[in-house]
Amino acid sequence: MIVIDRENSLSHVEREKLLDRVMGPARFQKSSELLRRGRLPADGLAFVAHDGKHMIGTVRLWNVKAGDSGSSLLLGPLAVEKAYSGSGVGAGLMYAALNAAQSTGHKSVLLVGDPDYYARFGFHAAPANGLLMPGHFDRHRFLGINLGNGDALSGSKGILRATGEMTH
Image (cartoon, rainbow, N blue to C red):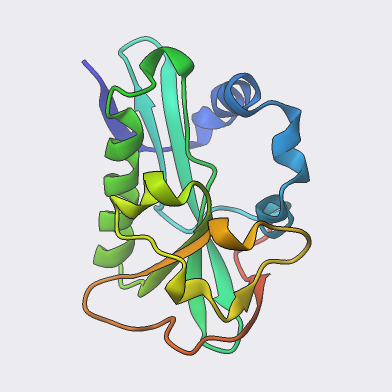
C-alpha cells in the first residue's frame, strides 16, 4: 500500500538518494535550484510517498516572492521512483501539496515543468507570463496556478526571489 505523508526530519538522506536516482546531478543546475539552495521548504509543505519499505516519491513547496505581486510558492522537484511511473504516485503527491498549500492560506504556486503533465492540476503559462526565474529557464515550461478563486498572480511582473527560512 502506498502512503503519502508529510516529510519528517529523518527523510533527508533517503530523499536525496531518490532525487539522485530519478533526476541525476543535472538537478543542481536548474534555475529552480537557485531559489531552493540554502533554504528550508515552506512549513508543512513537503511530502513523501512510501510503499511500505522505501520512499518512492517526493515533492516540496518553497516560499518565494513573485516579482511585484507578493508571496507565492515554488513547487519542486516532484520525483517518483521509475518503477512507479504512471501509477498515480506523482498525482497523489501533487494533490497533497496543492490542497495543503490552499488550506494553509497560500494563494498561488509556480513551477518549471512539463506543461502537458501539470495542466491536469490546473497549471498554465498565463499566470506566470510577467514573471522571470533567476538564471536560464524555458519560458514555455514556467507555469502557475492561482489557488481557490483568487487571481494572486494576475499582472505580476519581475523576478522570483527566495524568501524561505535559511538552513542552519
